[in-house]
Image (cartoon, rainbow, N blue to C red; front, side, top):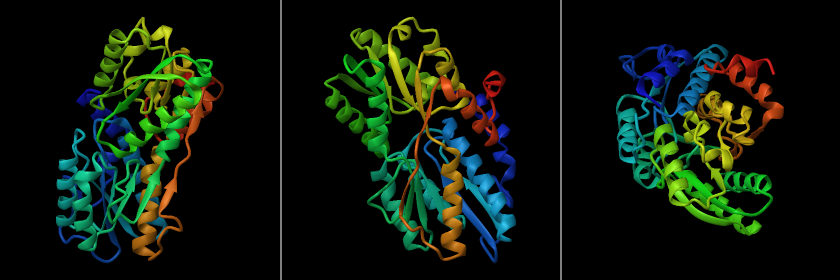
Length: 338
């Protein structure tokens, strides 16, 4: 995704203008006092649209809860432009030094951020994870999908589409991301149950261009690939695979169902998308942090599982309208009318 497009998405979501009392992502002078609550949000990559939507969810929750609970809640956006665990660790330290009251983050590399998370918690700044956990850290909660089951479900859908036989590949994004490691393993385990051969697990930089290029490269290198289990929807944010001749001969099932990806379902290239309600990453995260800090209420379960939504041609219009209701831009009008 080009930088200009990323900026357009962010502006359309309204997230750049909604952070109250901030200047360049930092809280106003004086830090957190009285009813002011600053939540630093650190996603994996600001060039990945799912984290921009998560930011929109956090901003919306901050606005609503500020009114409901008579608070002044703001989001300090500290997501790096590209995936980098070391940069995330630096951003955690920056959040603490800049006066954040809590941190909401998704780990690109759990090993590289765990120490920084523990230091933040030791300094009185609670940390909640979403999407990709750092389970060995002192974080107090996690909200996201059960990643092993995500991988299993993706491969199970692909097995159904392929009649339970054939050679398949797994598209797996960042090889250091713990959530994706679990998804890839789940997909491999499910393939074995069906007796399907996994040709390979293919990692890549998590941009639409790099992901689509990796799919095309793998298809050329392994012409016997008959299906793809995409445990993240990275290449489908690009239209490249819609026009790739090889893709037309394959079966593809993918996680995520953002506006750019809906055309793949509409045109029959991808029969099933397994949507993560990524808006809720931010929405539930902010609500949980407010409950902990303002109401001194810990979540009943520290691991909160987010269910996937199965998107096909049959419910494409319903899902498109949900995306629109969340304020996500770029939803094609023709899907809204289905």
